[in-house]
Length: 565
Image (cartoon, rainbow, N blue to C red; front, side, top):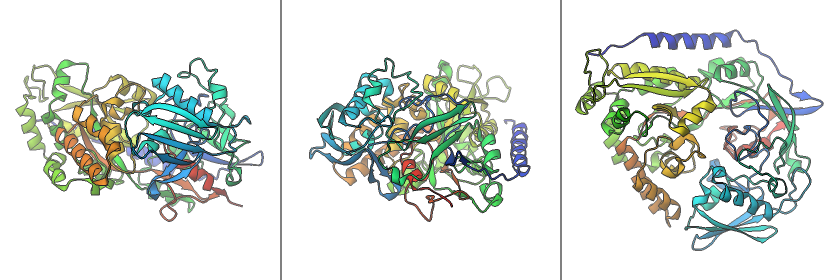
């Protein structure tokens, strides 16, 4: 009944040929990271369209070497070691017996990078900032935090609004800034903090220009004897193609981006080019439940429509082409990562698995059932009102796996008569449009935690649909029961109760098909052993090896690295 265009297939083939061709034509180049007799580690934690001197740890626009490297956390919970606490600015913490409060004992002798002492006043002030400026609270701490009290120069007590057995995991995510600097900042929301003062190992910004910058040693770092690197180098990398061409020449020491056919197009180029691909989160198609067009919004609101879209997807084909075989099809209609299989209710998984399976005939039946049919004979389905039905799918420009996935989805939807137009925008615009609800559908991945709770919380908690939060819940779907369950989880007194809550969350999200999970990705991690040793990998899994922002363990990683003689 409906036509299938081959034009997109040719676009994809051409895209891949161009990509691989650029790799084959590249010459290997050993970059000597020695400058002024200093040892320099080149890392790529994130792509940036431009280099701006913004090291405000509360800002979404801050440079990706701000957290951990400049602003050290109280504690790093090691996700590869059963969340073992690795104490940093704090040396211990203690929950109240009734879970209504928590105290942190601070490390003595820590100094800010300007030589002034770090004290409990800095911790209290930092949380006061997030209280008085909710825009700075990117981790939702205010919903739990009642008050912060200084008990001594080295002890801070947090009074919670409600009991929370997991409070420490959230509280340590808020950056701690120096009171003596930030108390004089009139607008902390827009403050760029171009000359940062921090407690982390690398606080001194040098040689910044449009191509990148150096971030060098904190002269007063409390654990200087463990730090064997002089400077971090962050080069501007604008997109995935730019990244692939340059990592193949040996320019980067530590990175984490998608490389197609990574064994052939990276590892084979040098015995020093290594990678590890631990299992990661799900890439999903996200719908905008408050789409501007009322007719389109009404169609999206129907679960039958979302299920039809899901059943029109050839998931293995997405993996084979867009991810070059790196991943596996999603089985959980809730979008929960495959790494959490033991947390899933097998009955729920099997019940909704048909909606995660390729079945275009049933998909067409669902669309006909909700009167999304071809009303004018042009072979494209229309809204029930007769208005044309045209979706768009938003992705960040340069994210080649996302971009190719979008192209493939466009072609797959044509088979059931759904017209979708892919839109690629710069990453900053991508985030702005999701936050503003200025899109129809989009692709996203999700952060992962030690249990599925972080995924469900960040992805479906309506509290995170405010502008200051990350993109993950910007589908604007709201469900009071989901919100209630997410609030109960941290207060649950036993593992069985927490498991029951996760089972119900999995059931609700799956039954409503809030998003369309596509495939489970791997965590992208590349490292170059030519100049440094001590890398975390499958044979040395001391901690999460990712260089990405919002990975606290990267602080442990950088301190473990040693330059080769």
